Amino acid sequence: MSEFDLGINTIDDFDFQNKTVILRIDINSPIDPKTKKITNENRINKSIPTIKELLEKGAKLAILAHQGDTLDYHNLIPLEEHAQKISAKLGKEIKYIDDVAGPAAQESVRSLKPGEAVLLGNVRYLTEEVSTFEDVVKLSPEEMLNTYLIRHLAPLGNYYVNDAFSAAHRNSPSMVAFEELLPSAGGRQLIAEVGALTKVTQNPKRPSIFVLGGLKISDAFSMMRRALESNSTDRILTCGVTGIIMWMSQGKKFGIKQEKFISDRSLDVFLKPAKELMERFDKYFINPVDFAYEKEGKRYECSIEDLPIDDALFLDIGSKTIDLFKKEISRAETIIVNGPPGVYENKLFEKGTKEIWNAIAEAKGYSVIGGGDSVSAAQKLVKDPESKFGYISTAGGAMIRFLSGVELPLLNALKKSYLRWK
Image (cartoon, one colour):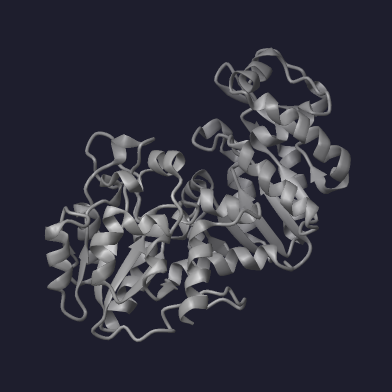
C-alpha cells in the first residue's frame, strides 16, 4: 500500500472468494528474434504477487496480457511460454488457451473453479487492442463497450483488476473499458509503481535530483520542464545526447561527425527548447564537463574546452563529469533516473553508466529508476539492483508521462471506478 491516497481501489477492498476476476497484467517481454523465446522475465516476475494473492483469496482468474504490437510485429507471438513460466514460478498450473475472447476462451473462463486461473490469448490479436487502432480511431471508454473483447468477456466477470502500470498510457479496451462495467482495483504492482512515482513528484525529500541521459531525449525534456516549472527538483544532471544538446543550445560546437548525428535524427529540434530552459533555469542544470570518444579502438576523454573534434562521436561522459555527478548524488535525498549516460553496451563506453548507477545504488537518497535501457543497464552493471535502488519501475512510456504530469488513461479509469463502487 502507498502512503498517498491514490483514489484507487486495491485488492484489499473486495471479497474475491468464488468470484470471477478479469486480471490485466503486463508480461510483454523481450523475445529472441531467432528462437522466439523469452529472454528477460522481469515483468513476469513482477506479476506473480498479485496473481498469487488473488488465487489464495479464492478468485477464479481470467488473465489478459499482450506481447508485441504493430511496431514490433516480430514480437507478436502466443503467450504459451508466458503461461508456463508463470506456472513454474507459482508452483501451480496456469492454464493457457490461444483464444482471447471467443467461444473457447469464454468456456474456459466459465469452467474455472475457485483458486484456478487461465491465461487467455494475446490481446494484440484483436484489432481494437493494437496501437495503430488506438491512434487512428480514438474511442472513449464508453464507446469501447461495443468492442469484441468487452462484449464477450465483461459479462463473465464479477471484478476487474489491473496490474499493468507499464501500459497505463494505453487507451485500449483491456485497459480502460472494463472499469465502466465492473468494480475495479489496482493490483499490487500497479499500486507500488504509482506510489513510488507519487513519492518522488509530490513533496519529494530535498535535495531532489534528476539524472537524464539516453538517446530518446523527448522524454528528458518533458520530464525536466515539468519538474522545473513545478519546483519539484533542485538539480538536473544531463548526460547522453541530452547533455550534448544542452551545450549545443549555448552555441558550443562539437564537430562535424557529432553534429551530423544530431541533425540526421532530427534531434536539433530540441535546441530551441533547451536554450529556453537554460535561460530560465540555468542554475538548476549540471551539464557534462568532459566526454569520451573512440580513436583507433581506444577510449579517449576530452574536456568541453577541447571541442570541437570533427571526427568523433561522444558516446560517454568523462571522468571529471563522473566525479561531479557523484558529489551531487551523494547529497541527494531523492534521485530520479531515466536514460544511461553512455553507450553502456560497448565496453569502451560503459564506465559512465557503471559508476553513476553504482553511486545511485549506494546513495542514501530514495531512488527511482525507469525506462528499458536504464533498467537493463542496472541489471548488467549493478550487483543485486533490486535491493540497491529504492524502486525499479517496469514502465517506460507510462513512467515518462506520469513524471511529465500527463494524465494516464488507466489511472483515470480506475479513479472513475473508485468513485462509482467505493
